[in-house]
Every structure is written in C-alpha cells, then in structure tokens.
Image (tube, rainbow, N blue to C red; front, top):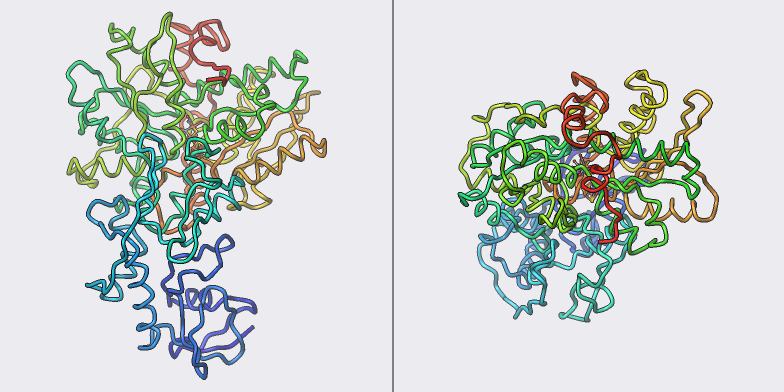
Amino acid sequence: MVNLTIDGKKISVEENTTIMEAAASNGIPIPKLCYLKGINEIAACRVCVVELEGKEKLITSCNNVVKEGMVIYTNSPKVRRHRRTTVELILSQHDCECVTCSRSGNCSLQTVANDLNIFDIPFKMQLEKQPWDKHFPLIRDSSKCIKCMRCVQVCDKIQGLGIWDVEGTGSRTTINVAGHRSIDEADCALCGQCITHCPVGALRERDDTEKVWKAIEDKDKIVVAQVAPAVRTAWGEELGLAPEDAKVGKILDALKRMGVDYVFDTTFSADLTIMEEGTEFLKRFTSGELKERPMFTSCCPGWIRFIKSQFPHLVKQLSTAKSPQQMFGAAMKTYFAEKLGVEPEKIYTLSVMPCVAKKGEREMELYYEEYAGHDIDAVITTRELVRMIRSAHISPDTLEDIASDRPMQEGSGAGVIFGATGGVMEAALRSAYYLLKNENPEADAFKVVRSQGFQENDGVVEADFAIDDITVKTAVVSGLANTRALLEKIERGDVHYDFVEVMACPGGCVGGGGQPIHDGEELAFERGKNLYYLDKNADIRFSHENKDVLKMYEEYFEKPNSHKAHMLLHTDHIA
Ligand code: HC1
Ligand code: SF4
C-alpha cells in the first residue's frame, strides 16, 4: 500500500493507483475532460492537473501514479488559476452555443466552466465549420469538438474501426473522418459509441423527433410505436426515476399522452424473431445445410454494417431473420393493418431504440404483395424519447404503468433479455431445446452465456450445450474490436462454433449508442442485471409460449419459416 495526503486527508491506496483514482476513491473527484479509463489516458486536456507539494510544476492526475509520502492539492489557488486558463483556452475554440446544443445540461465542458465561475471568455478564435451531411444518422459538429481524442480512441480500440483521425497541425488541429472521406464513404457501423463517449455535443444522433411530432399531428396517419427491450433500463436515468420505477409501461403511457395511437413492446417481436431464427438454425443445423459454420445472429444493425464492410464473404452465414424492430414493423403494416381494416400506407411505425444504427436499419424496404414503404418509418433513441417527454411537459411521476395494446401484447422474459449481450443466444437455446425435445428446459439452463462483467474475457463467452446426442457449440461476443478478433480466430480455424451471437455495442443494447450519457461511464453491465431480474420475474420465460405470437402464426403467418414469413420477416441482407 502507498500512503499519501490529498487535500489534507491521509489515505492509503494500492500501488500503481493513479492520483485521480486515489482521490476519487476517497470522495475527492478531480475534474477531467479527455480521460477514459483504459481507453484514453493521454492527459491531453490538462484539466485534471493537481499541485504536488515541493514541486513548481503542476502534474496531471490521470496518468501519474501515487508515491509514498506525496502531499497533493487538487483545488489550490494555483491549481484553480491554471485550470481556469486551460478551460478558457478550450472555450476560445468552442462555439459555446449551449442553448441549442443536444448536450446542454449534460456536458462536461459546461460543468467544468460553471464550476470555475467562468462568465466571460477572454479570447475567441475564428471557428471553421467542417461540412457534414445532416441526413446521415450520426452528426458531427466540428465547432464543438475539443480534440480530447475520446472518439478516435473508442472507435479504434473498442470498435476496431478507426473511423476518426486527427487532421491538420497547430491551432488548426482537428478531428475528422480518417482518410479525407465523407462519413458515408467510411465504414462507420453507426454503433454510436463515439457519441456516448464524447464529453461535449460534438457528436450526436440525427434528430428525428420533429418528424415524429408531424406524424402524430397528421390526421391521415395511425402512429404505431414499439419500445425496445433495453430502453426500459435507462430512460429513467435522465428523468430522475429509480430503476424499479422506470417501468416500460410508463414509456407506453408517455407515448400515448404524446398522441401515439397504439403502443407495443418490442419483446413481442423478439419472441417472434426467436421462432423464426431458432427454426432456421435447427433446420440448417440438423439438415446438414449448415456446412459453413457458424450461423450468426442478425438482429444488431451495427454488426450487420460491420460484417458487410469488413467481412463481406461471411454475410451468407448470417441468419436471414430480420431484427425484432423490422419484424414488428412488417407485422404492424400487414397483420395489424388488416386487423384495423386499413391500408399499410396509413400506418406510421415508430420505434424507440437504445441504438443509432437502427436509424440506418429502417431504410430496409417492405414488400407486401407490392412495395409498401418501409417496415419502420421513424426511429428515435432513448435520448430523443426523453427529449420528447420533456417537450410534451409530462411529469415522469404522473406516468402510469400501462399494458401494451392488443393483439401483439405479450412478451416473454426471453424477449426482455435480448437487450443484454448473450440474451439472444439464451432465448434461442431455450426454444431450440423445446423444438428438439418437445419439453421445456429449466428456464435458466443456458445462463452461462450471460456476461460475467463488463467486457470480461475480451467480451466473449463460449459454451457447448448437449441436447440428447446433439452438441451445439456457441459463442457470444459484444464490441466490434472483440468481434473482429473472434472472426479472425474462426477464419484461422482456431475455434469452431455452430451459432454465434454478435452485438456491436459492448454489453449489448443496454450499452447502446442511443442510451443516456454519463460522461463515458460504462453502465451496460448494471443495466443488463435489470433485464435479467425482469426475466426471472416474468410470467412466461420462453418465446415459444408467447400466446399472442402463436395466435399471429395461426391467423396470419401460418408457421415459422413459412412462405409468408419468409416474404415479410426475412431478408437476404443485400439491400
Ligand atoms: Fe436491441 Fe433488438 S435487443 S437489437 O439491442 O434484437 O436496439 O433493446 O430492440 O430489433 O428486441 C436494440 C434492444 C432491440 C431489435 C430486440
Ligand atoms: Fe444498436 Fe444494440 Fe447493435 Fe448497439 S448492440 S448497434 S444498440 S442493436
């Protein structure tokens, strides 16, 4: 142990602890802008400087470790003066248009500037705005960028894509899409991890809330919404609701109060996806058709964009099942439209997702006998949902936990866990067991595929399951750099699997790029626990027991993988 004094408090910490960590673990938070543990430890912003007794020069606390006998001051007059000048310099190159910024109220730069009582910025540089295609689901505003490098490092180290890079020199140094490409020419997976790790408002998702308000206002449209599994774990964070109070039914109530006509829970179509994908897997697996193994899950559009650009020769190994978002959209515009006795064109489908890539996935077209538009008309992220609730002036504490509408009401615990890494695999195995044996396994029989901690084991969980004389070799991975490493092992023949689940965002959708932002804090694992709790306490825990899904097959799709199901619920991933 190392003994030192921070702000007059004597403390003892493990060797090699940074000064910043030592202070934080003793209730002394040191402000920072660029630091991200294990990802960006480059001391670029210098906001975290501290004074070390006996030394003239201040030192950065994020990358200097504690030493025996150190006496540190984190907020001395000298530290405050230095920090203030540093922040003023950063602000001189920042547009400071906080009122129109998506991160106003949740911006690390705003907080640091406020804490330092900065009311005037003594100097201002001429800012050049780099051009940006505002139709793209990911928006970058160069005039807000503080060159902290977090986006560059997250995309490179965690997602293995390297979309961002440093450009220019001296005062013209900036971040831009690498290789002088435009963002739609780059191989961006749209995972949105750069957004959730940006300390300011330089990166955000395209705002689609106005489009939704217009659809709600349009008397000719019937607005039908779905809410993804992972949204329930995080929407309350920004509205001051405790996790146990932030029920999905309250989101449904908020949507109805905003004027949405029908509200559904995506767990319904997650169950539908299991019926389709599970049946497809068993068919490919037991018929020997699955020559090229493994079969990959197909519900994460960040992963689909990644495989298409990085491993295009493996696209044929994807399940042909559309994602639950798209399946639900297709069912809303066909089965549900018929129930209402209206044409598909009248239905406006809205999804609330923890994800930015879902905004790209919605471009997929729907053919229902003839061209019928898109499965999904608009996608908003969890953050946009919160903005809509605020702009509708709905007090969160008045929301009621209402049920989804009929007839696509039921959702199983298996559908709920889709939102966490391993959840799709676990849900699929529960039903595959039933399809093979005609009896249910114990509901938690496959829980070893669950993550044991945030990004433990390089984000990979492997498990083999024996069902009678059949052994299914599975792997689950999240995070695209982890995925790249796993795919390379598969291609080298180092590992062999039958079925692999991939989620682009570390921890799965709970850690999605559309979720509330907590200055780079990783909450995926904690949010995932909430989904497993909901599954444990669900009335039904098997997708194949979802009565409303079974009824829809009976009344409309006939059976899993039927011709109609293939037409509406599957895709060749070419578009
Ligand atoms: Fe997901 Fe999925 S789990 S991909 O993360 O398969 O976004 O939550 O909705 O479609 O169900 C996201 C979450 C979500 C789909 C489902
Ligand atoms: Fe979107 Fe979920 Fe995939 Fe992330 S893991 S890109 S949130 S679908």
